[in-house]
Amino acid sequence: MIVDFYPVKYADNTISTRYILKVVTFSNCKQSKRYISKKDLQQEVDDRVIGYGYTVTDFNEIPQLFNPSLSCAC
Image (cartoon, rainbow, N blue to C red):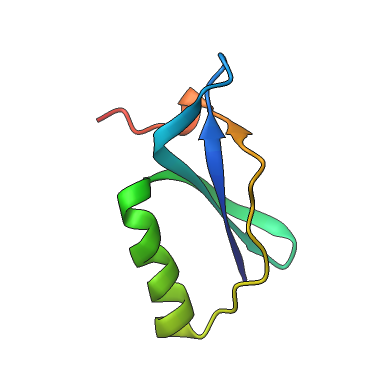
């Protein structure tokens, strides 16, 4: 299982200060994509690395375009 985190940019090319895109892949098949808050990012990473023994292999720095269809309708 691979969990990737990407910065998010909007259509006007501004980078989000609030959201990160989380992509979960299992056996080369995308399982889920969702936005998490930047404040939740550290907890997510700690849970995976410390709790489940995941290894950090790379830092994704290329912002992904914000997709409103992935947003919560809360």
